[in-house]
Length: 467
Image (cartoon, rainbow, N blue to C red):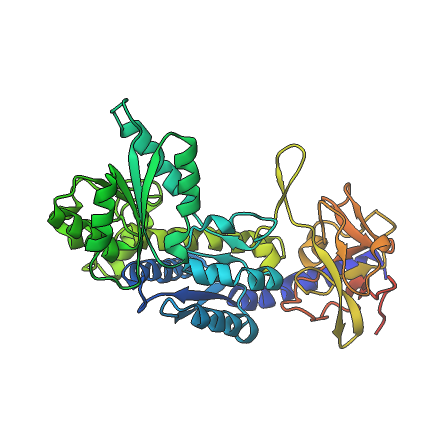
């Protein structure tokens, strides 16, 4: 084929590629949502869920994920672990979601092995410290300090606030009888031991408790100067009201799900003087980014009231939608790509995840595909590491590039994979052939570029698959 004919054909393909690009822009990205709207944490679960839903609506109204809409598939699991597990399996296996926005500590921790095995990024509203080790939970994320760091921060304040140098401050912990309630306790115990704070009492609050008098009387006998309450707002208000009725002078503090704009509304004067850990600002605070929340509120539900829990839902969505945008731009709109599965280079820079080249059965037989499942092509006019595809050609046949040699999937020979750093920012080659995608392949397994302009799909042996 002469250069003139090849150039003319590429010009035609540039125009033709505009049509499938429109179809791609309208594609949906499915994301799961596991919320507590009716369970024991629904007092804080509902405003968080509304924040997530509103943020997704805002993202879709403002370009989506590089033109693709997010479809949020939400479910109320009532703070019941078996219900959450069932919802997770349904979302992953049937709905084929690419990631999940979850909720509670017990259910999130119970599903961590599923999440890692399925490579489903899971952005939870639980800030459990047990989810922060990337070696054990590489696909679990949250946007806040961990519960462990939160109680350390509050205890640091206690240490600074205590003025009696004749003895250590005495602290009590009151926490719910569930994984969320217990999450920061061990870190709090250790911090007290190492920092001259006397932990004099621990009181467990049962689910759906209506009165904390017995726990407060026990705490009073131990002489606690400060007490940290690790339950949600409704429970915190019951503890504070009980303490006020008993005339306690203990200085109370609480966690981010017990301390928000809601607390003075339900605890009233009993909330006076309470301290808390607040990783997300109150709704309407004059900070960068808040304008989009306020504008959305005015345009869609101006008579509603919102709090920092609503803001927390927005923050989670703005975090994972950015991850989706980056994954999509990198051609890795899957779990691993969306998770931002990053390693740290020797220079301290974050580098992209190592892609995998796999085999996929298509109408052409088994051929090489990239990490997004899209067909990889070779150009018969290339010569070794020298590409003959430049300029407008690359608009149609984007180079498959990587900073590292890809992993070889089943049936692919690792030794045949190579990266040429000097060609198209690290173009990947297989069996000596530079690899390309075809822009008009809009779904995994499509082979619409086969035989066009000298480009052919690639076999496991590294040869052109001829029609």
